[in-house]
Length: 468
Image (cartoon, rainbow, N blue to C red; front, top):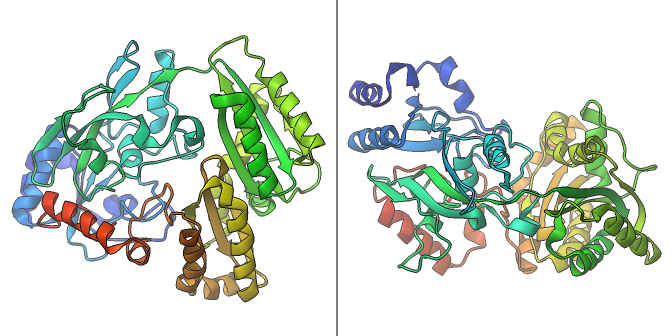
């Protein structure tokens, strides 16, 4: 242990090797507070070379490593296990924007850069980096890459995987793979970067990336809409995409239960519509042309949707502050839930066309067993991703309910897979779903995943106890 600590100090400097329990504490518990682990040390390298040196030191000592970014993950993927046998490698000091190429619409950014800082750098070059998450002020690019983050604009721009052109990765043996190429066409063999995106640090440590930029939208139109049902929401989405094309940038759904939690727990939150609609949709259109009449277009489309019985009420933002207030209602749902207490959370995806069926059947199956269940449904209906969270309003009853997580998961996840879906849409597997996924992936898939893991990390030192 002393020899390892000496090597780590030599690699990054004494002030960047934390061993005191108090100093390490913020890095040992996940954002939800569900997982708390322990570690030999938390190391904070400041360059790719230092990351490589840390990895080599851990390999020499046969000590496991847990890569960590902003620690905003929701499945315990960046939290060490409780055995205290690993080193946490926190990448927050690797936070530089290395370069921006506006003509190539690319940016090279280090893994510890926050998503918010990346967005600001893109805006400074009159470009857009479209990934948008509620945690963008604190989540970091490395974590976004390692979980293949989604967010609210997947509908138009895709997941993080779709935004990456190249990576720089420290491999499990300490070698550095420099794949930082800003190419949109490179047909020279296996697309190695795809192995590391979504791998949650189990195959290597991403230290930098070449990311795609886009023309910065000049005009936005934002509306909060009450819809007759999830089926009406899906039909409205189809009509908007048919008539507005890729100007539909976001289409988010929220059940009344989700909105009410925000109104209860988030200071300054106000209901955007009268009454308490059972289902609401947040819609955003955007266009790079300054003269695009998006508000008129959206108002016209919503008027037709009212006539068709799909929409029961709507409010269009007439200023940036009003649009931000509408978005705050959606983006604060997770925070409001955290204030409310523990719930059984699901991050699922099904084909968009089957979202109404999932909601109807899952609600019915769960309420048959737990009639007083509180079901909080919200998410990215535009790309088929729902956050489907369950709890009891009473604290003591909820504790008993949480103890039945396995039974609840079986109901929800079996239905998801029956409908052709996935039990993890954008949060990853981490510790939370590592054993659960075995039920739903074929033996062929699992064997391929384990083979890749063994090939790149034969000693099993990269983020053990996660994913596979």
